[in-house]
Length: 185
Image (cartoon, rainbow, N blue to C red; front, top):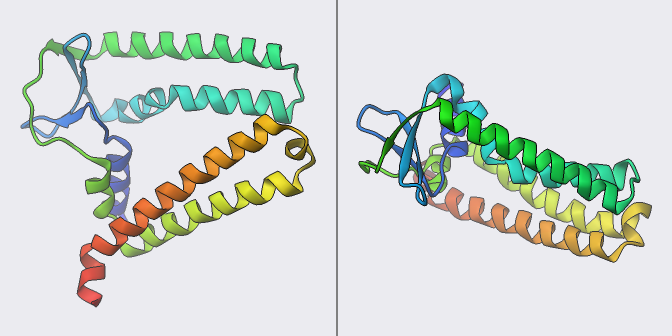
């Protein structure tokens, strides 16, 4: 179980500007400022949360507008304040980390490489969940009263369904390349 947990955590920490140094530490490189930040192991979860701050703000908007039936302008205003607050917290979090100018590149982490380390069961679960999410988003546009009359939400649901399907297909391709799957063939 420990191996699965570490592999999942590493998949969440992967990305374009995430590296590992020679000591195995996670390094976040900010290209525009040419600054690299060392993420300590006890701050990795906080960093992952702050990296998804825009998605969290979009989720906040969706909940406020659809679930709580708020006015669109009030929902956008609250989400703008939330976005500014999350950005401020992210920047202050980065300032507290150990940082240096430039980057000595080591092996770059990629989410696909880390996800391939997952077990076959974990890969299958992700495939099924992403495909089910895509299907349920499309079905929701026909069934839900809140979504059926709102064209923007229908388009948004279809875009999210295409994205979820794309991620599901990417996991299918990774599953086909998975080392345990190759042993079966």
